[in-house]
Image (tube, rainbow, N blue to C red; front, side, top):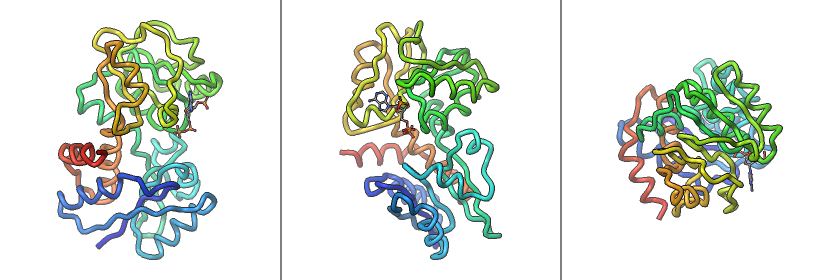
Length: 270
Ligand code: ATR
């Protein structure tokens, strides 16, 4: 039985062990997957200990994705863009390979819900690690424009210029938001605190989607705000399942069916 884990802090409420247990069961892969809480300054030693005990790979979550990026011998191009690693793969030669499946997870979840990005206007709220990780796969769908709006405007404009070679992208503060959007993604951690970013009225085009990268039992404050304003609503649960599926594929070379796992996970929230 091959061993995998998710490393984070806190990590006790992580849904990843449940998701990967479902994937393993479904595909008949012999593996187990646990949650490991690493101390704040102890990511590298926690991984090394796990690897010494036979760990073959891991997911990495908050706050260790940048630490994981730094620890790897080789990283994928998408991890390099994200400056963050959420998937570790230990090679047979002992070398550590890092990838980032978060952005692909978002893109696959949008595709699952038939959200078309081609030639559409996309607003992304937030300019932290979660947004950085999502930008390359989003721009690959060739939206007409991506606007990043952030509380700290400077972070949004720096982020936009880092990705300017991949498409029509700009960044600024909330006061710079202009016009209607076909997709508005909340990538801030404001939801966690129950805060709503100060977004203007008239944000949603006809048929627009509102997507929160976070999820909870109840709709997030952002989705509660967007619903009455006419947007179709999606939370980050599908993104979580899809990023996990991509990690599973990297480890096992088998693509699990995410449809039943979406359902299991939704039920597990209650
Ligand atoms: P993550 O890795 O989850 O993206 P992060 O890198 O700390 O975390 O980024 C958090 C994001 O949420 C940032 O865009 C942050 O805005 P600032 O760059 O101005 O700090 C945003 N954020 C957090 N709390 C917020 C709040 N209460 N209102 C608006 N934005 C908030």
